[in-house]
Length: 432
Image (cartoon, rainbow, N blue to C red; front, top):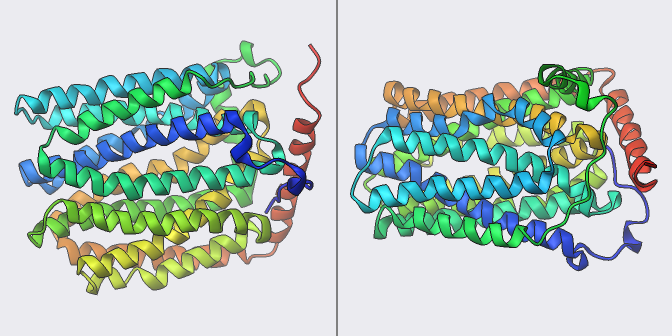
């Protein structure tokens, strides 16, 4: 696992970095809007139609962009001005979510409309996330990348803690309220990000002359040639699929128990608290443990915890389980993001980031769609048992893959690669 470069203790804290504060704060508002509306989509379809498969379809539409938009988005983010991309994405999402608020104010609930808006918001979120992650290296020193990533992950988990229960409470007032609130948050994010200035990214050799397909292929090749990195992404993709299904299953379970929609938000909030603490743990881990050990420890721990969801179905116990699993998940996310940002050349941040997100998050769309049909066929308890079995298999795979001969050598090679990119950034931009 690559560590941050030396001298971090001599640098001013990130809280004194004005550009990072603007990026962090504007993105916090954007993430709050996105998470609140996504939760409201699920509640809206479940409580107004009662159809588990329809809820799975909307969840699939929201996450499908992770599968189909990542690779072209990665190329375009490397070509376009990253600040401008973020501004356009925030404005577009505000318009899309605002259309749902207007529709619901007229007491109209159309599943096709909700699914279409979920897809649009998810697509623009893909572009935004890739741009924001790539922009981090332009606003913080290389030695503070892990700290910045930990703070970004902590921001997302803290937003979940507030956004999920707030969305449930607002939905209880009226179905259109969380969507109107999300629209306002997007507009506030837009105003904040207009003040942000990001240095232009480095250009790769011959980039302007290369076609979209060739640039996508270059990002795929870059990841595929690193067996250790590739294996970690595939294992994480499997665990993300399981957790996406777990979220939908819990929402269905709460409805079957006759509890209010706000209960779902509270369970998710418990997970967000665990994730918030895990984000800071991840920053610590990324500086002290190699990535291969983080992968093994995390998946074994998840495999031990997951069977509890089959038998402990009270909201309080589910909240505790979500707290623990999210704590581990956030730590893995921070470690993985820091690892990827450090080992990737600046000119390829968008493309490599898109491949990473395709693998680790694209599977979530399949998880949402598949879980809807599993719930119809096997019920909540059966679906949770299947998820637990898949997680146990992933733990075995992670243990075998990351203890094999050569894994340590590949991990060390990644550290050396990251050190080279840090020296490149410290040297400053190339001469004109």
